[in-house]
Length: 314
Image (cartoon, rainbow, N blue to C red; front, side, top):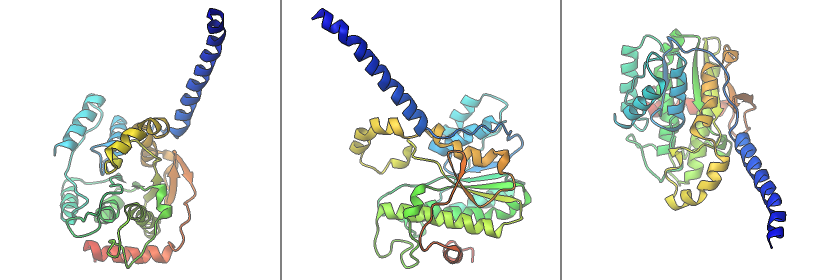
């Protein structure tokens, strides 16, 4: 029996080593690209929505390193991890589910800041129950798209004044499953949480494409990206038991917040993107826009006009 155990142990050791190596390389592959730019952000003003957690927090940490409650805790943690002398962090209240809050935030920025170099539209809500924003919009459409539409348009003049400047749109590859139904933008007819999320991200992509067309030659670059599948609080509306059961798989193949933030950071700082606009990125590299039927330039223009009315810009 002892001989058999000693005979088997090298095979078991080899199998365990092979599994360990396989897991290491699988996690490395799923981790995606890394932003290798050494560009400094000294003297730059950057606005990042949703920077109290997840991708937004890691993006803020990285950009600050380059030279309110929950948000203040996030800022304190970033300051602690940065040390002194590596940039200022200012926390301002912004509720994308409230047009009043967005307008108040923009009024404050326009009053206190003389430039905005980078705007990262990062905040989002994922497959929540059927809720409505303060203004009566379906929550995912209101937060993921309309709030950012109003925010970006209110800050456009300052972004132009600050050129070369950038607007980074954090979308999702799931936008290719979306559909712009002008008769059901607010899920008036029916609500499907998966479809509503995809629709909101498609709206953001069309907004980015139309914005790039309108700003051509202005010095303001527009960058749309898919961060990958990331372990963040975005899945907070899934049943807890489902999250616990899925955790081993999520740990293995999902990106960490640091990994997920890499394309945000790349689009914010990469020198090679200077002068480029209206393109789509994933894993710190340009990718082709996934095609979506019935989502062309005419739809984008109509959506813009409708959105201006919904947000009070027109």
